Length: 380
Image (cartoon, helix red, strand yellow):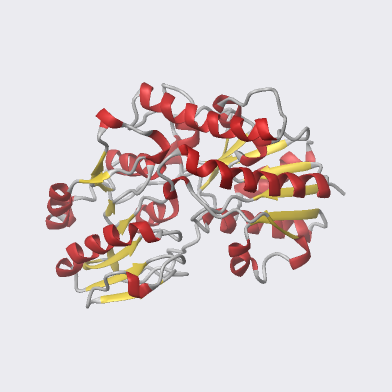
């Protein structure tokens, strides 16, 4: 039986774990030999899903958004890649499934390798895709990724260079809904969205009730900024559900008097009428599903792209912007346009221009992600 290594990136979001643990669990039930490489902080989300003996700890726990310069991330990235490489050499898999695929490119395994990517990774790879970034800005980001990986490859004594196109090209499974992926070539496999939150219990929308989700990995350096957002929205709503992540203490954050605050919600409140979020895929798709306006306040470049697209398709507002004259690529943070934020809060009922969007990749009783991964394993 083939040995399958799941290389699971988990910097901030648990979405990486949620979407791959189901597939790993299914393959275990089919008697495949599975190793699931993941950082130690993901263990609570694997309990009762993946047997302990199938889990390998890679001690990766960071994201680009935590760093102000590329030099700051090199040491952590190298440590992560080294841990993954040790797992790879010890386990000797026949196939790798990578949820972003980037780490495995630091040692280029000589075995079949399937990547699970989102729209942003592919959007950066060419100039024909709709994007908020200019050609020059895309080039800056791509070169930063290449530099990061190749600096680590030098420490692995790997001579052949990594290029961004090599990472973003097929074979890959694109994790994203059809209304975000229509301009991506059909040479990719499209698996739809795989979310952590369920929208099944949403019953009625009330514009006076807000769900504010700032990501699993809301970092301490964003506490002051996030507190300003919560202070701003407090008088606009009768009730605010706040999901503040697992990295900070609730008492560090401003707590609106009308708020219900939890690190994470496993299901959405039934009555929310507005979503304010950092621009993560799962929360955005959730808002589109239940038909409420979304206000996106992205914290990093990938989320800014998501926010751009939701405004373009008419399901919400992006209230941030770039200072394009001084663009730093991966390590920039968008700036909040407070005037646009105020205007959006004052006109919530007009911000959802399209109530219903059909996701053509949604198929009842079919899990395309699992199907495509199993097909890849069978054919390799």
